[in-house]
Image (cartoon, rainbow, N blue to C red; front, side, top):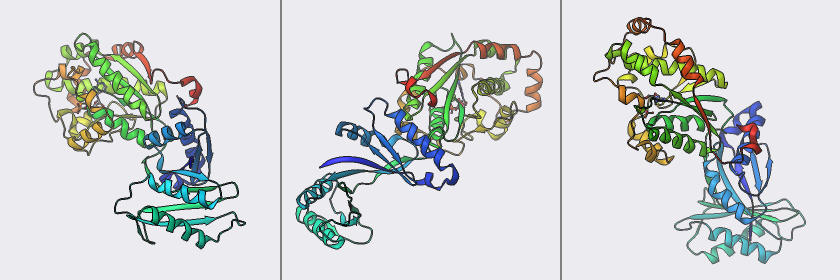
Length: 401
Ligand code: ATP
Ligand code: MG
């Protein structure tokens, strides 16, 4: 027996009507990008499914292992193939079932006979395969309606194909199928999870980080670079913009009363993020804000912060509980990086008792004493830009970047 190809089901994708081609094309490109390190393989796209045909079993194994992290795939199935010889069919069926968990499982065989000269009728072949499998695995129970294991056997002119396993995919939509947004990435637990949630909905990411040397160390910057790298593992590169924020924070310390300085800090961050967003062609800004988590995340605070722009701000975690966010962070492997104990530029300047209901007019009044515009422009132009992942064959798929 040989694993021959992988059948991919799109799920949500196939409901997208006229956009379908764009979606399937994007998924195909993303698969190529994610597996650029493997020998080249064929991808065939059909209306509601896709086939991947690797040339060797090693590539096949890698695909089966790594496909579950690609967004836009509902489920997939490895497909085996063999000759039309009855003994070969029997052995292949047994090997396919052998690769599955069989304990307390129900079972049936479904035959499709597209090659008419084949020596057995459909029912006959079904009987033949079924009885041989049951003889080999006495723990299986036959059940015609909704069995746990449905062994599909298809007799085609060139070969016989078999498939029994349905492996769940990551769901969501292919990255890039919903444009690009700018993620405000701190070193905390929440913002990487927010980025992940949007990647899953097909949004490509640029990320922006504010840091304040010497108040924040090189280590806290590395932490954010590591987080951007983790996010880039989901199948699309992430460009990270690092903004020197010290001068602005010092000016805020001087100019803005302590109890609303946090609001101004956030407003300046958002203004800068919006300028970078525009420059990079991103459409929206993403944050890790979650309602009520801290003083800056009350509705009143969010409103005062938000007032600096009309750009849509996506807050995918707004209704999430912290425990749920932590759960996702662990799943996507960002948690361990996020809890490294390095200071954040905000925590260092956090006042003892920030206002939970800052008044917009007051904040604007204090900010008007001395314009921040020049400092903002300088921060934007002095930014450092890096792309993750660092060493992939990015040139090969440069249209995806
Ligand atoms: P996180 O865990 O993402 O840091 P948080 O619960 O600590 O979130 P805040 O520190 O109030 O909440 O930050 C709210 C959001 O503002 C963050 O999720 C992030 O999107 C953005 N943000 C905060 N600090 C920075 C920073 N230094 N650079 C870029 N974005 C930031
Ligand atoms: Mg934070």
